[in-house]
Length: 160
Image (cartoon, rainbow, N blue to C red; front, top):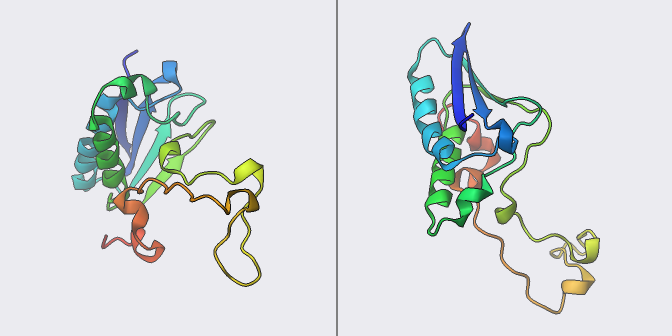
């Protein structure tokens, strides 16, 4: 079965199914490319009152299909960011029906605490640092997509 996004609308509920079960519903380039158009169509449909995003079978989504990441250039990243921003901007209530694994965005996560020790803020209120990494500069985390940088008070507002 070719990876694809399946969509349906029943009783005002739009359902988008991430369907790539052979790869635990990993998102292919075609799926990233299709998602903004699917969301635009569903947003314009007056019969749609809510969106449910889910995965086929026992896995929600295993992130990006890493086979496509071998291709040169930043096209995969651009497609993913465009799709994520379209999902964040969807103007109707949106739910994720997550079963099983839900993986992604590991490349943009901050580095883990050194040697498995959690970073704790000292009582003085200064920024947290682990003792093992205090003498060397920390690698900056990759910039998150624009929707992740919005303040929480505005990210879910219908006006945004």
